[in-house]
Image 1 (cartoon, rainbow, N blue to C red):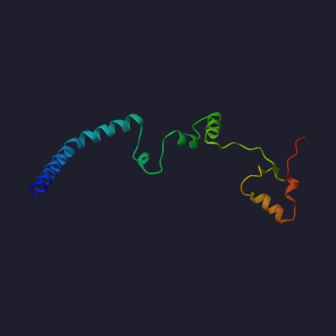
Image 2 (tube, helix red, strand yellow; image 1 turned 90 degrees about the vertical axis):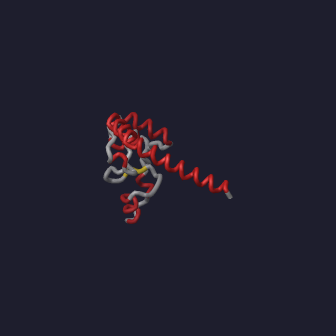
Length: 121
């Protein structure tokens, strides 16, 4: 039983030491964080969940050239597919994914989807 009491006493002492160290180093840690935030231009808004300032957000913001954006797309495994269908107003569709509204409306009017296939030549 004395071992348990000794261990609990040690735990109390260690928790008290940890608390003292934490309070002593708190200000220094905050200063280190502020210095790094200033060096990298990080704001409190950047620290909010879902707010990223990495390369991906620069792509979304249009800060990267189009050629670099195309390379990034290829790296992700998404490729641009040539249009297979062209609508009467110049709309295009690759034939992949959901049918666009313009195509669905034309088919609903009785027109054949095949009549909008883009022919080469």
